[in-house]
Structures are given as C-alpha cells and as structure tokens.
Amino acid sequence: MTTTTVLVTGVSTYLGAGVARVLADRPEVAQVIGVDVMAPPFPLGEAEFLRADVRNPLLGRIVQQAGIDTLVHVGAIPRATATSSARTSAREAAVIGTMQLLGVCQAVPQLRHVVLASTGSVYGASPGTPAVVSEESPVDTRARSGHVRDAVEVESYVHAITQRRPDVGVSVLRLAHVFGPSTRSAMTNYLRAPVVPLPFGFDARVQALSEDDAVAALVAAAAGDPVGTVNVAGEGVLTLRQVVRIARRPTVPVFTTTGRALGALTRWAGIAGIEPDHVDYVMYGRCLDLTRMREVLRFTPEHTTREAIERFATDTWGVVPTLHEEAGGSRPIGARPEHVSGVARGHDLLDAQESDVVEARPGGVLPAAALRDDDDGDTPAGAVDVPEASGRSADPGPPPTPPPGPVAGETSDAREAR
Picture 1 (cartoon, one colour):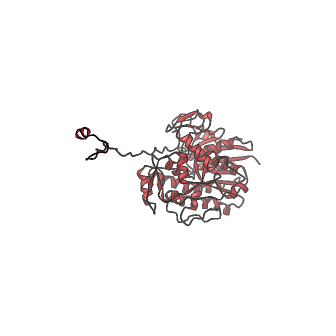
Picture 2 (cartoon, rainbow, N blue to C red):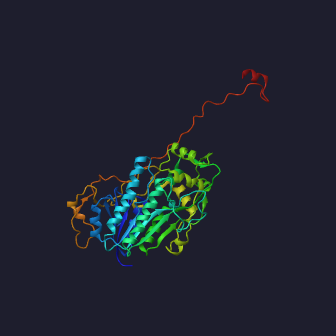
Picture 3 (spheres, rainbow, N blue to C red):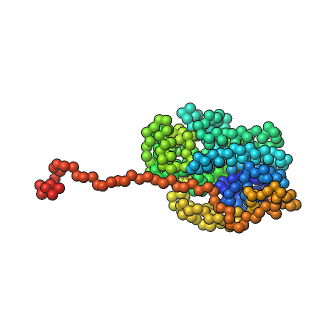
C-alpha cells in the first residue's frame, strides 16, 4: 500500500481514539490527524489531535493542506444522551457535520477512500423484519426515531460522494451493538439500569460486538481497499434473556404489546438514550448476515457475541481497565478517566480565525504554528458523561401483623399473650 494520510473523526470516543492510535502505528501510514470538539480521554499514540468542530469551515483548509487520502468518519455514531436538547445537538452534528465534512473532503484531489462507522439499526426491528438481514435488505426509511433516520441519511451522503468523485471508494460498516466498559450507548445503558425491564412474551435475538473488535474492523477497512457496505458483528446469536442472565442483572417483566409501557418504564428508570427504535429492538431483535464481513472485508472478530457480553459484564461490574496500560492502570466504576499525558497533544481550532490559518510547513501536513497549543490543561478531558441511572426501590414498610385467630401448634398462654 502507498503511504497514506488519514483523518479520523470522533476521537473523544473509544472507537475513534483506538482507530487513530492503531493506524498511526502502521508503517504505511504517514500521518493520522484526529478531530473532535472534546479532548480524548484515551491515548492517541503517534496520532495528532486537532480540537475542532467538523462543521467549522477552517477545517477544510487543514484537510486540503494535509492532502488527506483516507477519511475514517467515526463521529457520525450517535452518543447516548440524557436530554432532548443534547440529542438534537448530536443529530445536527452528525447529519449536517457529515454533509459539510464530505463537501470539504471531496475537493481534496488526493482523497481515495471514505470509511463510515454506521449501525445495524438502519434495518429497523419489527415483526416483519427478515430473520437474517443482509446488506441488500432495505433500510428503515420510516423509522420512528431520529437516531435511525439520521444514520440512514448519513449513509446516503457517503454513497453520494462516489457520484461526484468516481475515483473515491467507500466502506460503510454497519456495526452491531458495541459492548465494552468504555462504550456508552442506549443498549449498554439499558443493561446498566438498576433493574432491567423485559417485555413480557418477547425474547429478542441479540448480536454483540466488543469495542476492541469494532476498532479492529474499522482499521481493517481503512487499511484495505473499499468494500462497500458490510455488516459487522461477533459470531453467534443470543436471546435478550440470555444476555441479561450472563450480565447477572435483575429484571422486571413489562406486560405490553405495543412497547409504550416499556418505553415509559425505561424513561422512569432514568436510562439515557432510549428511543422508539431501541424499544422495538428489545422486543423483536435483529440478526445480521456476516457473509460479506468474512469474504469481502476478510475480517473475523476475536470475540463472539457471548464473549463480548461476558467481557462487558466482567469489566463493568468490577474494576474497569483503561484503553491500555499506558493510560494509567485501572479506575473504579463510575470514575471519570483522568486526562492521559500526551493525549490532547495537538491544536485547538475552536477559537481560531481564518486569518490564523497559514500554509502547512514543508514536510508537515498539520500547520502546528497556526493553531493555539493545547497544553495548558484547560481543555476538558473526556467525552460527554452520562449519569448512571438511579434506581427506585420501594419502601418495604413495617413487618406484617400476625393474623387473628388460633395458630396451629400455639399454646393457650401464647395465644393470650398475642
């Protein structure tokens, strides 16, 4: 493979940071630039960090000067948020940000490959969903939640770039639900609830992908030739009740046929990021066909679905390791990852003006001198914190009063005392 220059978005997440770090270690990659509005709490290795919004027009100057030939867009994956305003902002950043980012990148003559981290949720989940959905199965264009509609729209933008630039190939990885101690999603928040609500009479099929395998799949796509659309998941399928048992979570049955009661209960329990499509999923489930993953992407996850759930359960309800030992050992559950030395080594474009952007120095693809150095420690470390769901336990009340009347085996003296 020829020497490449890679731009990775969403590096404040485990997936984005992992992809940037691994790609930067590959000998055929000249440079990796990681972009996000928040400083990554995970190590980036040799990758450079640029603090910027993908909607910032100044980013286009950087991309053109850098001569990006591979774009790995991880920032389009929606993050589980607790408030409707935060979800609206995240959707705007995902959809509008993707459209503007692709518009900038398509003007770069060196661009050859666009890799998108998408989601298997684009297929939807309903009684009419096929038993196994392949990449040729129709996507859910009438989804009830914005999360799915946004993912479908983002995919359409990525595929459309090939019409304007036939020399650019695309790889769209539709990931199954990603599980790991560093990943926050509607599904992981669902299992982290104090009591997991289960729809009575339903037992959905579940496929899982460990967060490390998700990173490896995106790296395989970025380092190889364009593969089009590919489903990615761990081998094997579990039912939702099997998943809950493996995770050793307490459950409560919800008597519902429409999902409304289940949705209301998840909101009552404080589970962040739950939308109608997630309620449909825990009722009907979904199973992805992995043929193209094995034969076209030539990728096999290291962990099966069961192993991904087991690792998630072990790591979450115990001591959670950081991305690598270099990140500072381990941290207790609920503790915010400390800012890793060197992670935010990079530059801040959020407050930069167009007059601040200068031509890149010879031999360098990032105009370091043009941007404010971000070593003052003021940049907040970590992605958006999602508060743990707080449980609601009923007051057991006073002990029951013994019933009146005679009790078998009771003496007359004891009866009078009672």
